[in-house]
Structure formats: C-alpha cells, structure tokens
Amino acid sequence: MSKERDIQETRAFFEGWELYQTIIARNYMFHAEVIEHEEALLARLGKEKLSIIELGCGDAYAISKVAEAISVTKYHGIDITRLALEYARKNLEGVIPNVELVEGEMFSETVGKSGIYDVAILGYTAHHLVRNDKVILFQSLEQQLTADGLLIVYDLVKEEGEDREAFLERSIQFFEASWDAFDKEQLASIRDHVSQKDYPESWKGWESIARKSGYEKAELRFRDPQNIFGIMAFSKA
Ligand SMILES: C[S@@+](CC[C@H](N)C(=O)[O-])C[C@H]1O[C@@H](n2cnc3c(N)ncnc32)[C@H](O)[C@@H]1O
Image (cartoon, rainbow, N blue to C red; front, side):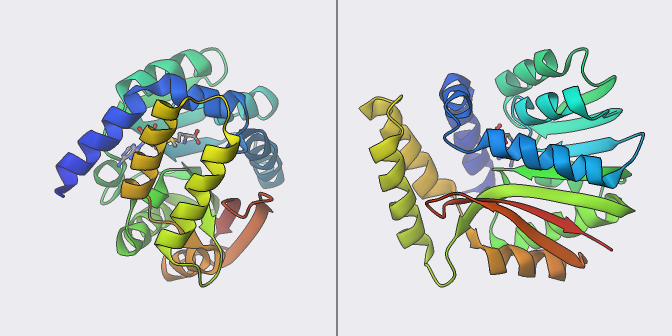
C-alpha cells in the first residue's frame, strides 16, 4: 500500500473521533495514568517555562489536563485529522497561552525541521511507523530537544519475543471481550485499523530505538495488567 493511501485510511478511521472519545472517557487506553505520569515527569523537570511538541496530538486531551496543574507556556501539536485538531483547540483554550496546531503528517512535519522544545510527546501514534522510521523520528526529536529535554512515549508495548501477529490478535481479542461500550460494527473497525496499521515494539525494542537515536536514559514507568500498553520516558542526560 502506498504511504499516501495509508495516511488517508488512518485519517478516515480517526475522523470518527467520537469512538476515540469513548476510549478516553472509559479509560480503555489508560489516559488517566498518562495524565498522572506526564504531570510527574513535567514537574520533575522543574522548569518555569515549558515548551512542548506533540506528534499525533489528537484532541490534546491529556496535555490539556496536565496543563491545569503544571504551567505549559508553548505547545505545538501536529495531527492529520482536522476534526481532532478542532477538539484540541477547544481543550487548550485558556489553558496554554501559546498554541500552534498544524494539520499535517508528523514525519514530514518533524524530520529535517528545526525547533527547540523541552518536551516531545508521542502518544499512541509512533506504532504506525515501521522500526527504521521510528528511529529517524526519535533522532529528529532528539535534535530538537534541549540538553535536559524529555521524550515521553506512551504506546503499544508487546512482550519480549512475542511476534506482531500474536500480539495484535491477543490485543484485539481483549478489546472485543472487554470494551463493552462498542457495538459489533465499531469493534470490527477497530480490528481492521489495528491489524492493518499497527507495528508494536517490546520494551527492549522501544529502548533500542531510543538508544540508537541518541537518548541515554530510558524509563518504563507504567504497564497495564494485560501487557498491551506502556508509558515510557527517554532523556539525553
Ligand atoms: C490513537 S490517537 C492518539 C491521540 C493522542 N495522542 C492521545 O494520546 O490520545 C492517534 C492520533 O494520531 C494521528 N495520526 C496517525 N498517524 C499520523 C501521522 N502519520 N501524522 C500525524 N498524525 C497521525 C491520528 O489522526 C490520531 O489523532
């Protein structure tokens, strides 16, 4: 499948943003834990002024909640889905003073671009990329982070040695059995999206991508009980 077609299909899936809002509202993908860990990580940086870039930001729900507790001065969000960005604008209004939202593809909007940020966030988005593209994207963000900057990644984390197909089937079966807010048709569209678009990594895989990209420290901060999701942090020093 061509890259352009792939992006169009991903965009079409997320244009049904209400489905994802239900996922957040029911905490199916642990956004409550994401908020908790992001808040702790940003507090640990101890900066009065914080600038953040977020790729595949969606409706920026998590950071809008974090920014109620931690002062974020500048936010640059990138996403291919216009509807999600409309929600992001509303969520961030009055919470972060300087907001730039860009409708665009995260890889081409980031790689080769210049920028200086304290924090980069990749939430449930990097798994759309194959291994080598993940390294290129992580490297590019590393170059745009301050010396004490932080990359926060929350995403699919498969078990060590588990192959892609086995992980995806195990995850989809769990979603079908426990995400009871969705009807059969919605679960079928989730199955299609996940099985065609997702390239999960194990914790060692994410760690290796980060090390190859110039990050010295790697932290796996959270794992869900089913070993499907994880919240990770990478820093240069
Ligand atoms: C699962 S949602 C995650 C949203 C948000 N980061 C969160 O944690 O809730 C994935 C988001 O990534 C966006 N996305 C997927 N592929 C993308 C790409 N190549 N470039 C930019 N955005 C992308 C989708 O439009 C969607 O908003």
